[in-house]
Image 1 (cartoon, rainbow, N blue to C red):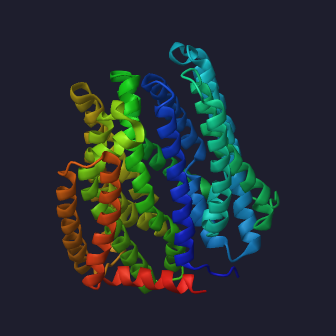
Image 2 (image 1 turned 30 degrees about the horizontal axis):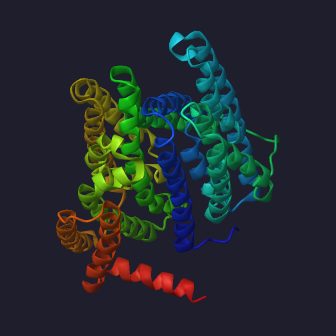
Image 3 (image 1 turned 90 degrees about the vertical axis):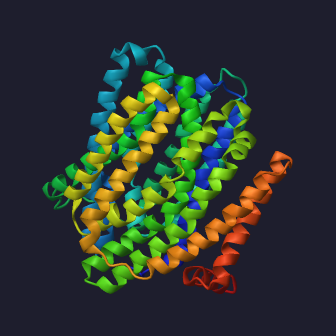
Length: 481
């Protein structure tokens, strides 16, 4: 039987890994914003957006389904080898099919053929999916290995960026380097997989995987429609510069969202295990604690962005991208909305084998987003796309919770939420005062962020909020070892 890993330690390493994933594109974005033209950045973002549809299709829902199945089989090595081999072969076959389909489309469509080098470079992401077995490591809770490996390749890509992206003509190098980090991670995943599993061709059976995989393909495609279609439609209905403005604002929003969602991702293997073993009290306690953590981070982030968005965008990307600040403000409610729906809907349904309800939820969101984008982009361009994203996520969250409410029971949420709101409002009042003062923009931003964080958590400690006290005690205990 595999030794059960500490959720606290897993959370630290998973959060560290997500911070790496945040800082890498953030640094790249800051650097290329000062080297490349907004139109070129928009072209690359649009090409990556198109490729992502094929990547999602070639995944076949395996990042989600594979995580669950590996979590269930991890205490039985023979069954683990069998599940791994079946899922790997399914993934490899689907990747070849969608790579061929993508190649046919870009070589026969004038819109793509006019910039064939760019679409060929970013298309390598599809081919690399044949090596993607991240679901194996997620299911086994090997978050420490994932973080260390990711740090190395992100650092390597930063060096490549500084060497090869030096002029406005180097946007193809920028696209290529974005692919390199993924390639390295996937390759190391494959090379180290022998430590945990052995590939086998004996006794394999694929039929039992098809139904849940097809559901999850549809789910992931629907999710991608309402997370990617904004850029797709913006590129078609507005222009590359609008795509660049939107991409920078949404990139920062997604970076913060990744931090909030990191706690949810870490608990998924344990949630699945608890539910499978009938440990419902532990399952509900885990959900309650995770929801408290989500609220603890997301509420002050959303309020804080209303005050610091302008300064943050100007400091990071320059005055030319000031439109991205309003995008960031509009998208800030997603920091609360999306993680709650993800935890209480998507993750609960995954643990309880209700993939069909996941499909219904995200399909409704996709339809709302398509309609919203069509109406709002015509009037408000990139700002309309942001509004449509928020509306669709609200709808998805509501449907998710309605479907999942009978499969969880939360405790102590309202008391924690009241304390969080009090601390957040006090922090917002402080930020309002600082924001109105005439201070050098860099210094103002540092004061707002650092002092705001200390004030927020200080107030929560004063009110003796359990979740904060517990986190501090765990960190102290870990540092004393």
